[in-house]
Structures are given as structure tokens and as C-alpha cells.
Amino acid sequence: MMKLGIIGWRGMVGSVLLDRLKTCGDLERFNTTLFSSTQKGLGPLGELKDSFDLKSLSSMDIIISCQGSDYTQNIHPRLRQIGWSGYWIDASSFLRDKSNVLITLDPVNQKDIESALENNQKDFVGGNCTVSLMLMALGGLFSKNLVEWVNCVTYQAASGAGAAQLKELFSQISYLKEMDLAQDILKLEKTVNDKLSRSDFPSKSLQHPLIGNLLPWIDSEMENGMSKEEWKGEFETNKILGKKIPIESLCVRVGAFRCHSQALTVKLKEDISLKQFEELVDSHNQWVKVIPNNKADSLKYLTPVAVSGSLSIPVGRIRKLSLGPGFFSLFTVGDQLLWGAAEPLRRMAQIILNHTEQKQDLRRDYELSRSP
Ligand code: HSE
Image (cartoon, rainbow, N blue to C red; front, top):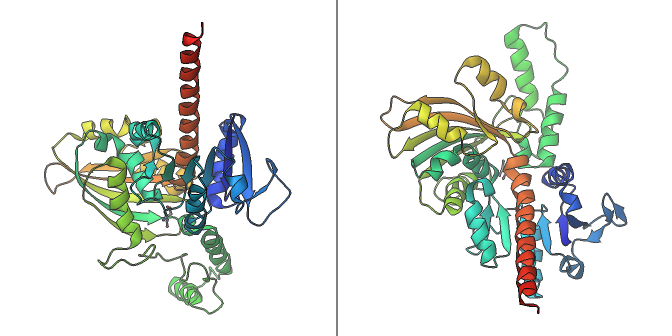
């Protein structure tokens, strides 16, 4: 049995990953060890190992790290230096721009994953959440090489900023709970808005109110006026697709809990009908689903609340635009902890396992065929 080590399993992405591994029966196919930097003794899957112990880590065949970039930066090169040749699967962004690291999203780049494995590549990383969710939604258009450019406006959930930020959003909601609803509406609005600037209003992690507000900047500043999140949108999409498609983004944090939404304007290289567009989107993978462009269905199926906790990728509000031939707009939602983070990692471990077992079977057949 292949030995799988998981680091960062108590964080949001790690917990979702562990839950998916259990639900999908994957834990029965691996000999799984959980690593921790703070906890010792027994954990949910047996004895915990120290996440800074290179000897224990290097006894694993596959490591999935959901611990964050600092951990990867510290541990990954040291493991490689001591000659560890296992598979590293990472949730953090640290390795994403390295040339010998593949961003894994198998419904979109299964073939590239297979050839990377054939070429003995060992480092894999999950994509940025908005990138993975956008590609899951638009895979049918990209796979037909139809996309000339994309403009994307995101509405990103608090969970994308981290567990502390999501918790703080809940504290902010709770802070506002005492309201005199009998007050005149304008007075009430002013009272509530004034509370958002009080010194004891909880904003240590988010730095700003997120309830009743939105934050039009995500991640660090780049010199060209982009946020790092916006830069990732173009860089990672093209790295996954192996193309150079202009992808412009404006990334915004909103008070949704764990689902990112994106409003996309897509320019296609050729004009196709609305029906063809919908069919291409809908048929790409089993999770994407076109939502009819009407008010009732959009409000029922195309919201963060509807999608939260599910693998479903609804795509709706699809319209042909009056801007000219080949212009379409659409709106899509996805759970940033599932397809946006944990699920591509879980599936990558499965792909490695299947690949390794196939190789072992082939070797066994070959040896049997040569035995007298
Ligand atoms: N960077 C994302 C966000 C997290 O801030 O929402 C998912 O990669």
C-alpha cells in the first residue's frame, strides 16, 4: 500500500480534504499518516508524526501539504536535498510558478498529468481557487480552443482569506445583532454603519468590515496596478492550459462564506449560437451545469448559499452580448474549499496511486512472461 502523509489537516482545506478522503473511501486504499507541528500522540487516524521530522516525512510515498507557503518553502527543498523522491502535492501557491511543477486540475489537464507522471515528475500543486473554478466552468470552451480573451470580476468568499477571517466575519455579523428595527430606516442605517467604524468592531484579521461592505483588493500589490490574485488569474490559467490567452480580472472579497462567484465576459474566436455555447459548457465535465437564464432558476441555483458544501459548478446568466459577434457573458459559482482547493489534491493522489499500480501490474506481467 502506498504511504500517504497529510500536513495541515486541521485547517479549512485540510479538514475538507480529510472529509473527502473518508467519504470517497480513499483512506482504505492508502496507508495514511497525519503530521502535526503542535499535537503529539493519537490523532484521528492513529499516531501523529512531527511535521518537521524529515525522516518521518521521507518515509512517505506521497505527501499532501495544506499547511501554507512558508511550510512548503522550508520543508520541500530540504526533503528533495536529502534525496526523497516521493510525490509532493501542495495546496499553497509557493511552487505554482516553478517550471517543473504541474498545476493539477484533472478534468481539464488529465493528459498533462499523465505525461508528467510518465516523465517521472514528482511535484504537483493545486491551482488558485478562482482559476480552478473558472476552468471547471469554462473547460468546454477552452478545450475547443475557442477563447480569444476573458474578462473576469470575482466575488470571493471570506474563507479564501483564511479561517480566522471567516470566523471574524461571523463575529462581525454577531456584533451587529442588536438593532432597533423599529427605528426610521435612514437612522437605522446610520446607526449600523457607524458601528462598523467603532474601535471595538472586530476587524483584526480582515482589517476592515466585510459585513455590509466589500473589499476590492485581494492579496499583495503588484507594480502594474494588479493585485497578486488578479495576476494569478492570467498566469495560472495559461500555465494549466499551456496557452497565452489574455485573462483580465478584478478580484473582490465579499461577505459570502465559502463560495467564490465570478462574472465573466468571454470573447470567442468565432461566433457560435447561444445553444452551442451552452452545450459546450454543459458537456465538459460531470460537475458543471448550465442554469437556464431566468430569474427563478438563477436565484435558486446560482448563489453561494445554493452551492456551499457541494462539488457542483453552476454556470448561468449566459447571454450573447450586443458588443459584437462572439461576445458572451455568464455568471458562475463554486465552493472554493472543494473544487477550489481540496478536490484537485485528493484526485491527484488517486491518479498517482492508479498510475503506480498500473506500472506494478505491467512489471509483474513482464516478469511472468519472461519466467521459464
Ligand atoms: N486566494 C484565494 C482567496 C484563496 O483569497 O480567496 C483560494 O486560492
